[in-house]
Image (cartoon, rainbow, N blue to C red):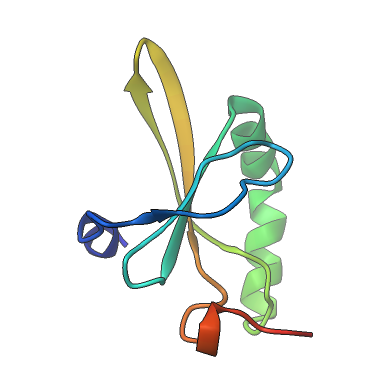
Amino acid sequence: YVRSLSEAPDAREAKGGGKSGAFLITSRDQRFVLKTCGGGEVAQLLRMLPDYERYVAGHPRTLLARFLGCHAVEMYGRRVWFLVMGNVFAGLPGGRADY
């Protein structure tokens, strides 16, 4: 995912980050999504990670987000966490699916 994201000088901010106000950005090739998150969200993700990993491994066609990385950077004196996820809608016409 590093290559895909580094080739994204024209990456677009997604519309609306939900109630959390998170910043969402999609890679240029639409394969990956970055989402900012707080330390509490990271801690919760790490707690549920073993169960999540087992579930995703046992259900390869699940539409749950695929967490691929969790990183932090220091910006303006504060730590900013972000998640890298696979875009479950990548490759679909119009980038969406109706269920």
